[in-house]
Image (tube, rainbow, N blue to C red):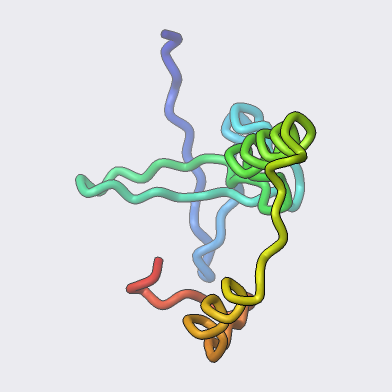
Length: 109
């Protein structure tokens, strides 16, 4: 493994800093990219490039591809949601209000 020299940057009065060029290059950062900090229990902080929020989740993509292939291979397995199942679903969740833009509470994170 290659040895890496430490690099530094200073904080402004507003606690802002410039990410040093070797770090930007290592993380392949461009203007407006986001960075992510992970604080470990020992106080060490790991800086990484933040995942692209608009990028598709690979697990979800794999599952959707699996479903699509299964539908093509076994179309006879498809069934409509019946009125009984629909009624049971609505009975359990029909009154639940969901705001997808609302931040999760600390308990839900």
